[in-house]
Length: 86
Image 1: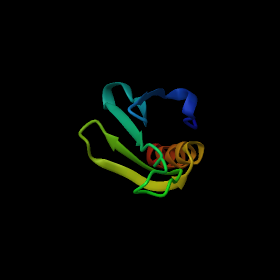
Image 2: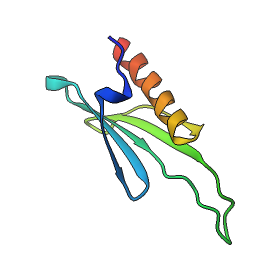
Image 3: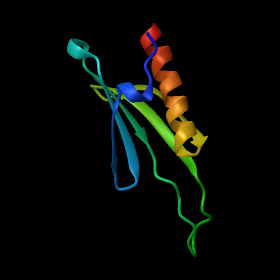
C-alpha cells in the first residue's frame, strides 16, 4: 500500500508544516517542512523548503530540500514510502 498525503494529519504552525502518520502500536512518524523565506531588507526571498522525517524517538529517517511546499510534500512522501517499504 502506498501512503499518500491524505493518509497524514497535517497542521501548520508559525509557517512550518507538520504531517503526522500513525503506525499504530509501532509508533508515530512526523514530517516537518520549513517555512519559506520572505524577502526583506536583509534576505533574498526564496520558496525553497527544508523537510525532515523523524520517528517517535526523534531518530532521523530522511531529509532534503525542495522548491515549494508541494514539491517538499511530494519528496517527503516518497521518502516515507521508501522507509515503510523496508
